[in-house]
Image (cartoon, rainbow, N blue to C red; front, side, top):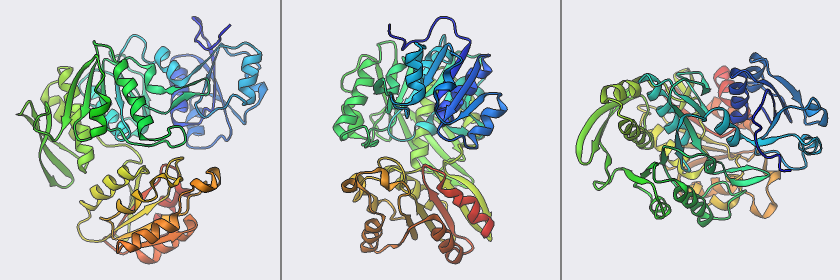
Length: 471
């Protein structure tokens, strides 16, 4: 009997790999809904461990058969968990019901609600976050699950009583028993497609493979759904070719129904115009900066209009949106040196982030610090592309990938080669074997007025706080 399903009656739930951002949020959601929740992970670590502990969720450090010996009604398996995991083996031997994270979200968070989904290689977290806050400000009391901590809520999830559930549509695989992308588990009323580029080199073969996955997502959207698709990428245009749903384009083209107009910087605000069907829709202001963020906001404005939310309510939400932790987040300032944290790791994300941050550096220099640590950025697939994305920076610091031994020797990214390529372009670039060396360099190099932009999808050995303390 196939136990990969959620039984009708559930009281106790165990999550394998509970300390991940999404799995931890799901565990808290389930606890808030009244379920008895336990979890396990390879390493129980803060801040998620503290978050779970505050919710009264029992956590087990390490994966062991006895962690599921009490016979939970349902086991939720994280996508990083392999079939050889001892708890997975015990789950099967005991005949326990199990499911993936998106299956659980559909059943426990999205059931009975209208799903609003944001997909794409870049911008998912920011776009979904703006949308969740806008719905809240407009009085719609939304539920959401997002891959970053929204400062307005100090959380990456929320259970509301309103009609909408906002979620990121991740193209990454679902679980060891379901290698399809996570976004195929949802049937959104409205969806956004921000971009389509090659990423996740550990599961996708090439760009054509990625386009095939996104094409499958678009073609699976029913006629009752609508899709907002970015107009500035040929890859997006190609993947929306086969569709049954209603499609609108957004971006900068005059032929698109939703268009970004005049933009001006009025620190700390960015003011921008929006046109709908070539007629002025409104002028908005936000604390976000960079064209990529304004395009994310444009997609949300289009969704909000489709939900009949008034322009004044949209404008208020954009003004009061406080951003997301680890997305262009200023961590502090010492000796007039500003330290910013950002999640950028894909070449396109790094380029847009560096360009956006450079636009707000008024007096000093922009020092870009980059740690390649994703399964893609530690591979040589983007070795040449990275050399062209740091051009606006005045000083560039590149760390050796910290987990390089996980990548086959013939496929490893070379930080030394990147620095050499940057120097050929005339850039002031430096290679560092570890985080301490970067911190020491910054302590003697950074001057009042400088802006230190630190980019990594990981903790980067807490370099931000350590640098501020030492400054």
